[in-house]
Amino acid sequence: MGTQESDERAGGGTGRRALLGAAVLGAGGAVLGLPGTARAAGTRHGGRPGGGVKDLPVPTVIGHRGASGYRPEHTFGSYELALDLGADIVEAGDLVPTKDGHLVCRHEPEIGGTTDVADHPEFADRKRTKLLDGVSTTGWFTEDFTLAELKTLRATERIPANRPHNTLYDGRWEIPTFEEVLRWQNEQTRKRGRQVWIYPELKHPTYFRKLGLGTEERLARLLHRYGKDRKNSPVIIQSFEPTSIQRMNKLVANPLAVLLSGANSRPWDFVETGDPRTTADLVTPEGLKEIASYAQGIGPTLDLIIPKDSAGRLTEPTTLVRDAHRAGLILHPYTLRNENPFLPAEFRKGGDPDAYGDVFGAFRTYFATGIDGIFTDNPDTGVLAREDFVNGVNG
Image 1 (cartoon, rainbow, N blue to C red):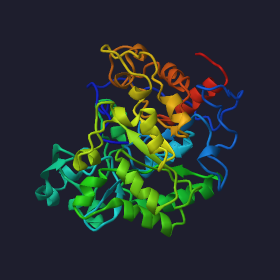
Image 2 (image 1 turned 120 degrees about the vertical axis):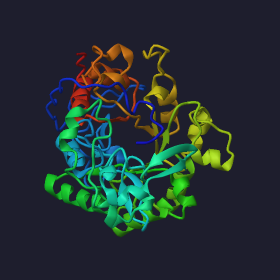
Image 3 (image 1 turned 45 degrees about the vertical axis):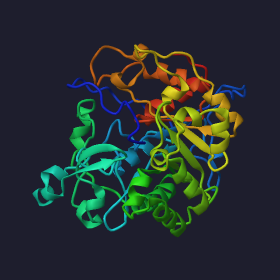
Image 4 (image 1 turned 90 degrees about the vertical axis):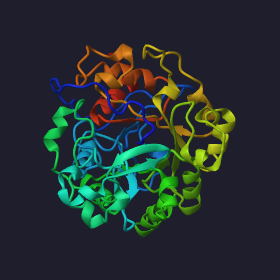
């Protein structure tokens, strides 16, 4: 999940490490069929083999870049832990290309903040300042490295001020390729006896296309090679650029989702082509109907579901859930994290930037809007919160 998030880093300092919640591998309870409420989680955790998106438990718990609350993101350590903790889908990964055309999993093409590249003197001269979707960005970029060179690097924690405990695992895992992820998905499906789902994101597709490194075609070729380019394939594709999803709709039959940032923002492909529309235009009934003509879902920021006031407290829910459902779209908003700085103000406990707040209360509030699932850095917390919700436990 992408650059457009506004809550990526917060606070500073260190504090106690909160304990992991127990992983719950299913959720029962009465089915709530009323409009505007979430349907109860299904009994087939992860969906039946060959089943489509509608066979996933609802609300669906999506491990954001794996279990990134506990391990450096976009590593096999993070991905496997997400499955261990009960995630229905793993966001594996944010896809960016190498110089020689391989798709790898990194939060951004700039890797200075997520790898140990700065500690490699042989790559000191690769440091650059580039304009990335209109933003001047300095660091090391995947498109300036071959895959073999990237494989000499190791992943590190991206937000150590909020997750000092994750730095324990710095240097343990290399950067995965998406082809490795597809093989891993097959292995984990066999090992766990249930279908493992993944939710890759195409990052900055317009930027890379201008560099001659179009990512949609590369992704489509890999999905076709592994037989995962079909309507019921366990791979949902997402992007913040609607035209990228439109392109994927012509290349593969996979379920597709358009990511949506703040209401006043504009997708970068719109900026490049002179399309004046903002996200606010895309979330109108007319905009959602258009999205539904080429995608099956949307991934809005949580603020599009329930806006916050100037003090950071939640206000009244918007009509987005209702309007999207009327258009036939599923909603998988992002991103709920356990730490205080990332929670709405009324759910924070104290001022420690790596202490946990009342995240169960936050999950309950968002689930009650009728969303179909949610991205979370802490899948175990999400699974427990879902169990509470479908069983009517109010905390």
